[in-house]
Each structure stands twice: as structure tokens, then as C-alpha cells.
Length: 292
Ligand SMILES: C[S@@+](CC[C@H](N)C(=O)[O-])C[C@H]1O[C@@H](n2cnc3c(N)ncnc32)[C@H](O)[C@@H]1O
Image (cartoon, rainbow, N blue to C red; front, side, top):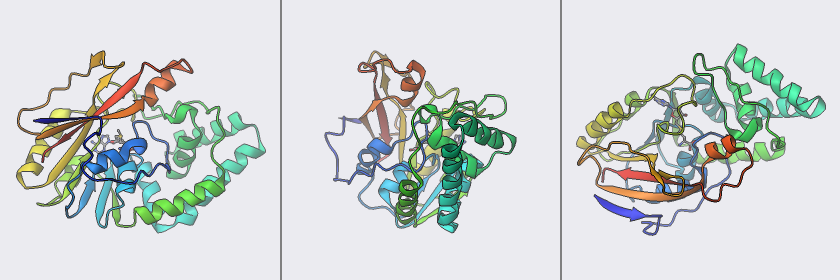
């Protein structure tokens, strides 16, 4: 396996796209361009089976793609982005205005309660932008959102609307589906490209609701894709605490051909947990494993 460090060997220049539509824990917005630069220079269809906020897909802006996730309200947001962007803008604006008009925290709590009573895309969209640290926490047992109101002011509707328009254009080649990753990955054919960003094992145990993640099953699916001639890139925990702790995720022999370490700055999760303490020493490095 060849090893590349800290993006020094970017294979082709990719313009960064840093304007987030959704705040999402573990999102790759800040260095999605680095990840994309390691994709093959030519491939057919693009698949992103752990879509989350869609940062990598929107940076790539593929001609034809499938973006999927198992989280239904999230996929509903992306479908609405395509089918009715004005609805997405309205969902955000209504909640933003009601927060401005009343008691900010009480209004946030009302929106959160509405989501918890009936999980839905409209409330989720606003909660992810307004919650503390942009880190939505779900209660393990039932997916109940517990994150308190953020201390920041969510971006104004005008800025959000501009983002909607930009994201709609950049993702216009994509179809969004609600699916387990295996179903999406099995759709790929020789010459297609898959980028996997599964829930992190070490730092995200409490996140994404009651989902638990079995990486061995993912390796098997990646292996099947690789043998069909599909290119696969997998993001996975790198080192934490300034390199003091290397996350020991077993990686099967011969599944990957290359490994890249990407410097992704401070961990969002750490920042949330340590509430304002200096985190200069908390540099996190992300690993990118490539089957090609
Ligand atoms: C680390 S996040 C992806 C972050 C994304 N790359 C971004 O930039 O925002 C992992 C995502 O995988 C989804 N997920 C968890 N288990 C899944 C499964 N079995 N199949 C598909 N998606 C899954 C979660 O809902 C979550 O959105």
C-alpha cells in the first residue's frame, strides 16, 4: 500500500467549495476538495452512500450521481432541494423569523419538540443550523434530538436562500434515495466511483441515533465493488490527540491500494464536548483509503 501524507500529492487541483447547506457532525466540507482530488480523473457514475450533508458530492458537482443515506428526514431535505427549492427556503425563513420575533431559546425548543413529536425535514433543516455547535445529538434509544440551542445566530434567510440556489445547481446531476449503503453500492458498475464516509467508530458512538455500525460488512461490500471494477474511496478515523492515539480500526489486507492522510483541523465533536477550551493540540487527521 502506498502512503501519501497531508495532501502534498494532490493529484489534480480542485477548487474548494466551503459554503455548507446543512451543519452536520463529521461533515467534510472544509477538505472535500482534498478528498475529491484523489478520485480517479475519469469515472462514470458517482455514488455517495453515506451522504450526510453532501459536502463531497456538492464539491464534486458530478454530471450523474446517486446520493443516499438511511436518515429519512435528511433525504427529504435533499429531495426538496431539487423538487421545490422555494419550499426549502420557506421552511428556513419561517423558523428563523419566529425565532427572531420571540424568545430565541423557547422558540428553538418549540421547533425541537415539533421534530421530536414527528421527525420531519423542515424542522431538522432549521435545528441543524441553529443547534449548539452544529452537532445534533440523538438519544440512543429512540432518535430523540437533545441538543440545546446554539449561542450563535443562524444565518439570515437571504444567505440561506443563496446557498439553496448554489447547492441545487451543484447537485443537479444527483438522484437522492433513502437506502442502506449496501443497496446503493450494489447499483454501481465497472468504471463507477463510490465515496464512503461511514459513521466514525471512535468518536461518533453517541451520534446518528441508535444506528450501530459494523465496518466488517462495509469491507465485504467494498470488496465486491472492487472486484466488479468499481473505484472505492473510504474515509476513516485517522489519528487523534495530535497523533497520540491512532484509532485501531482493522483494515483487511489487499483491499486498498493506497492510503492518504488528510489534515482536517480540529474535530467538531471535540470542540462541542470541551466547550470553549483551547484545542490547539487537538488536531485530527482523517484517512482516505483507495481501492485503486
Ligand atoms: C459521517 S456521516 C457522513 C458525513 C458526510 N460525508 C458529510 O460531509 O456531511 C455518516 C452518515 O452515514 C449515515 N448512515 C449511517 N448508517 C448508514 C447505513 N447503514 N447506510 C447508509 N447511511 C448510513 C448517517 O445517517 C450519516 O448521515
